[in-house]
Image 1 (cartoon, one colour):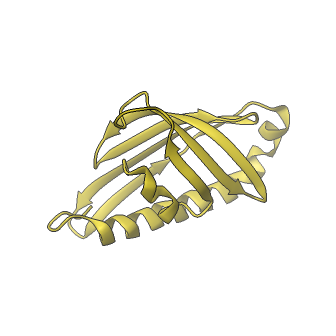
Image 2 (cartoon, rainbow, N blue to C red; image 1 turned 120 degrees about the vertical axis):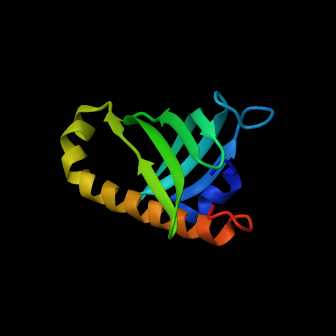
Length: 132
């Protein structure tokens, strides 16, 4: 998860995900994220808020309509890898606050799909002897 070049492989809506700040990826690093969701192109600048490779990666970001936090954790389990993908959204606009319940199902499905794809990616690309 801390290899930013892999995110487009398991996040289908993501067009770009790259570090903007200099040096190694650390808490406080800035990331540019470009995604296409429901026909809209959304450009976001994120900040890394937690980093514990290979177990946890968290960012905080936002755009004109909403702020969000993304927290990804991986945990080895007997039959593979448990993926936890939390993505609370904090609407800024009145329109998005009203639409949030309607978009909730689509967001949950997209999040479940990304978690499934992350699990598949991690289990298929881990180091020898490591489930991720």
